[in-house]
Image (tube, rainbow over all chains, first blue to last red; front, side, top):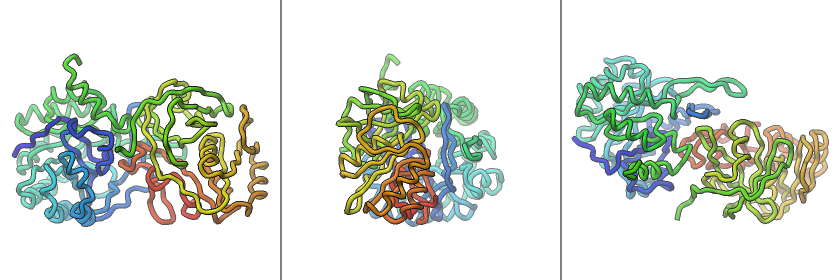
Length: 278
Length: 219
């Protein structure tokens, strides 16, 4: 299975919400838009405060706030996201709180699965107590989940999103290959903590500080798997960042927190990449 | 037709309202409804939200310097920003008053201009410029003024510190609306970062607000 994107630029799951940034993006500049992670059940998300920023990083603990898969399917069938599907290829992001949830959500997504060019499974959210990082730390459980999902979503381009915690990216990429999945996203946020005026905020770190870490992850996986589809994610703010990731082996590059700095950044980077003199 | 614009704005004039709060008068005219806000780029990794307003006939922002990002913003002549964001405030019937701190004086001007509300400025610091509204200096004078005006208006819109908003709500009760400030990243409802816990569950300041009914809020 092959995923051909019209542009290597992809909006990352999470910061991109449910398509809101298309107000600022020329569809021609975008390869795909990955929606916020949907879980089996509705999640209200983490107790506020949820987000802070420094000069080179953002820390968040959104906690996967989402309507749950059944509402999401109903909304999709009702046309709520048609404005997005009409303009850009869309990738569905799914997550769960337990092995059974990871599998069940795949079944529940089946009625609308053809609307998406791929599904990215979030195996690395640092902001939920179960699922995410807790799942990847048990290789047997993770493998069982991935084999089952592959069986349920037989014809879907499946991408596994891993961070650098809970599992080495080299091991994660072997798991992707062994279970017949089609691609890997590297990396997710990394757990961090910052002081606030009235305490501490624990969450996932994103932003420019992640780029060298993401570069290394992509590099290591590309060295081992010449033909694996790799989506890079972490610290992409400029055309040069995209070129660097493509050079170490990424097939596509996600842009997330940089949208907070400049909501038109996809177009700006696209223009920069098209400019032969840059 | 896009709902929001990401553009360059130019500062036509800046002056101090208090020792730490500046009025930035924009060269551009921005179409907005009172209550809506703007996200401004700065050296930090996320843009910062400021409620849109007027000073005289011009679109203007009141910005209190709280840290590196706001200090940088008040010293620029050209800024990148997206706007107008948030839910427009549509007042109830009757006569209203807008109660502001220095950092929301321009919002007060917009409420006066668009909805004809009275405006009261409460400040802990000396006011350094002429303003066409009543103002009081200090907590005690502010408290006395709020007790004095209680019952004189059909609605009260408060945009200031959480303490100021709580005092007005506790004193006046029904008919009070408050404009909330929460750390934001996107300003457009995408990231879900500006969540607040209300009596009706989680809400988001950027899309459900920034102005809420006082009785929705856990002060």
